[in-house]
Image 1 (tube, rainbow, N blue to C red):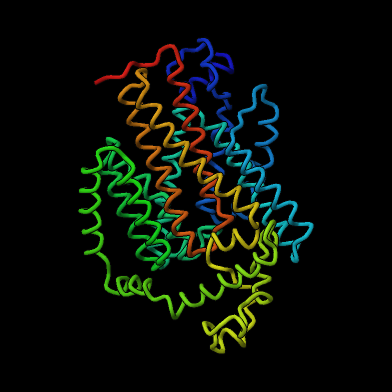
Image 2 (spheres, rainbow, N blue to C red; image 1 turned 60 degrees about the vertical axis):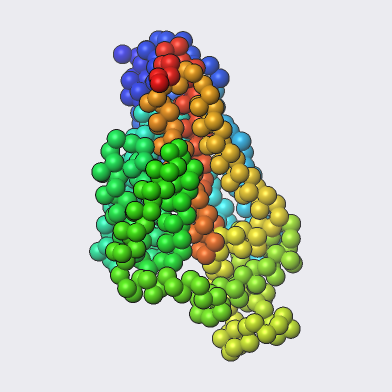
Length: 433
């Protein structure tokens, strides 16, 4: 069997027999089986972080090899999403030249390069249906491990960007829409329902208010965006009622503090957000540099002349240098300025607009089968809900450099590619009533 045929058989090239003509403009470049499995191994190393092995930093091998393999392709897949991500990476690299703490800017740039390399791999390696679905549900299974781990560790994750309680809750909030969409649109409703309960339980154990807001946001997105809205709302209300009744009393008390904006952590966040705003006002175009906001908090923290909001000794006598700003958006504003904000907003807009466009185009295309429409409903809802959960929870967490939005937007590109490739295939099924 030839190498090309082996690739098609492994990845399940949809609607195309070995040796059939090409699929047209949306035909993906076929990756090897090795590249696919290397991507899954990367996800294990990043999300599970097995003790002993993760210290070997094998992830770096994948990150460095993927761009080389991509450059060797005769037709290199690319997208507007990757252009925007690359622009953010370039801005971070340039900030090394002017940042106060150039080493931190370098570390953030290196991290962004790794995230960009994985996003590049996702848009290329997962641009066929079987590979896409295998990878998505493999990631869902990995997050089961993290959720179970958190139940045994008091709400903490296994490390990395899923380390403390807030990180764990955010991770579970972003994966929750995938299984909730599975309840709405897949045939494995019972399994997806059990997984949804597991992720929700992990968020409760974490006692993270930001994670809870992400959970609510992701669920509402799934309910309101998909088809059969009345049915979805009914399911959502029943699930929300059961969830609320099952909450421990201590967690309900913790959630009630979300409304308290004048004391405690809420007041501290407002203090830090004011400092981040001061940074931006001083560096409005490019910001203070990647990862540099914590090191400049003390220089820009509010002083007496700025009003009566922060007059206690903990604010006026303490130097807050080294404290993160506890908000994706203020972190973005302070560290990247208007340029970075514009690029980030463009990624977010492109992600949701692309998902909406795919649903709309598929609904109008007579070649689309009922089964294909169901897949698109499932994955567009999940990818939109996961990104929305991240963006809402991120309002209260310093997660600007976490990979969720980059990965989700890359998955959306891969989804669009394999769906349109199937429609262009000669054997595309006609829509059924």
